[in-house]
Length: 257
Image 1 (spheres, rainbow, N blue to C red):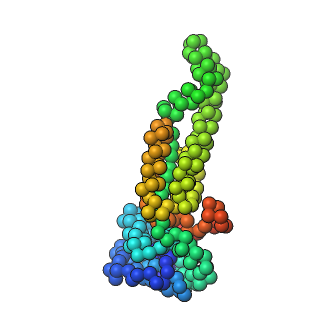
Image 2: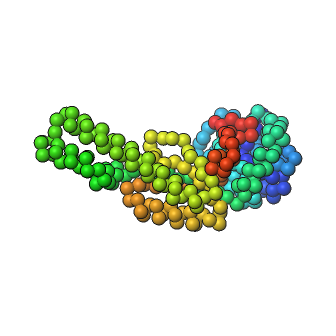
Image 3: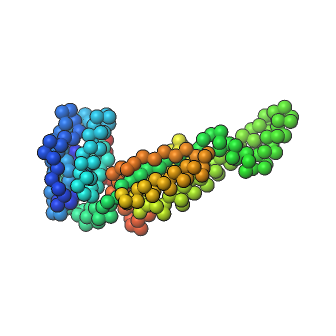
């Protein structure tokens, strides 16, 4: 049977509760695979696993239980290896890397910050900042709306100005929040967000980081901010450019479903 991997920790990690269950229905029994100074928290992988709410919560609950006892390198939901030997083989192969990551992520959590523009507010800001757009808008109004070409040109100018404002706001958000974090990792680009970045934050500095986010929110009423966390540091299992190391992706010989 395939092996479902929740996370990697040190073999000196405190024992987990015997009744701790994982994904699946009924919940699969949690096991610990040891290899040298490392250990992987696993269970059998249920057949036909899908990202249902019950199993997503079970995955998070196992990581929360492990994380309460010390640092853990979390695997994303759906990380499956062919068997136990594959998992322990990768632990042996990448032992130095995983031990370094456990030290780097000790006592740290992840906060994901997403931002989008409030449409009416950003349009008002773009108009106030761009005299050419204001002049063309007024000229079109006085001429009964303007010609098709004039309206088209005005629309193009507004779109360009909004895109420029998105880039400027994203850069400012990162400059403002990055000093409060130990590392940053950009999330996947999406047309729905002008900013999608995860921040690695020391647990003791979490309130300071969230206060900084709140200051940004108050000072930029045209931006809507969404903060998700504290989370297991999924985005930092592999070192990124912000940590001055080579970057890679993926888990311990796993696939993600």
